[in-house]
Image 1: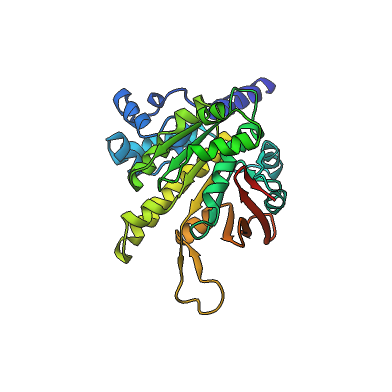
Image 2: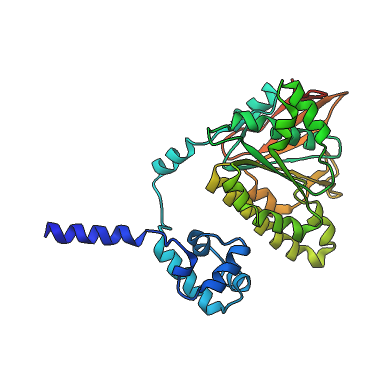
Length: 328
C-alpha cells in the first residue's frame, strides 16, 4: 500500500515537470517551434498562458492545434493557487534601486523595486528622463548579484537618450563612465510596432546579459502618434495592454525593475485643480505598480507625488536635478 502511494506521488510530481523543448508539445513540430521562438515564445510556460489565436498566428499553424498545445502545456506545469507564505518568500528576493534622493526613496519605500512597473508621468522638463538616467547608473551597483556586470536595457522612443548625461552622473558618483556606458544597451524605437518587437525579442538578452532594469522613455509616445482619433482607441489600448503585460512578465520572471515614463495631456473636463492627466487610460493605470506624478518647481527643484501604490500611502517628495544627477 505504501509502495502504491509512493508511485502515485511520483506520478503527481512528473505531471508538473516542464518539457525541455517546445517540440514536446502536441501540434508543434520543429518548423513551428522555430517560428514561435522567433516570435518570443521560448518556453512551455509561455505557451501555457498564451492566447490561442495569437499563438496560431505567431507559429503559422491552426488555431485548434494551438489550443491543444496550450492545454498540454497547462497540464505540464503547475498553474494553480499558491499559499501566501510561498509568495511572501519569493518577494524576499525583491531589491530596490536608489533614486539618488533620500526623500524620493522614502516616498517609494526605499527606491524603485524589482518585480514591479514604476511609471513617472509629467509635463516636459519635469524630470522624467533624468530619473531614468540616474536609475540606469545606480542599478549597476544596487542590483549587483555576483553574476557579472549588471546591464540595463533602454528603449528610446523620443530621441531623449543622452550618453553625455550618463557620463556626468557616473562621474558624480565616482564611477568609470566608460564602463557604466558599456552596461547600458540602447535601442531606438521607430514606431509602436517596432517598440513592441524590441521588447518581445529582448528575452535572450535579458537572460544572457544579466539585465536587471528596463527603461522605456516614453512608453506611450509612439502609441499616441500611431493611433489617433477615437476610432483607433480600442486597437491602441489592446496593443498597449499586451506591451505592458510583457514588461510585467519580465519583471516577475527575472526579478528585474521596470521604469517607464509617460506623456500627459490637459483634461478640459477638470475646471478646478490640476488638469494634467497621464496618457494610457485605465490600461496603464491598472498595470503600473507605482504611479508618480512629477512636476517642476523653482530652479532645479522637482516635486514627486506618489498617486498610486499597492502598499504605500500617497505623499510628496522634493528633489533636485543637478549636473551630477538627482539629489536632495
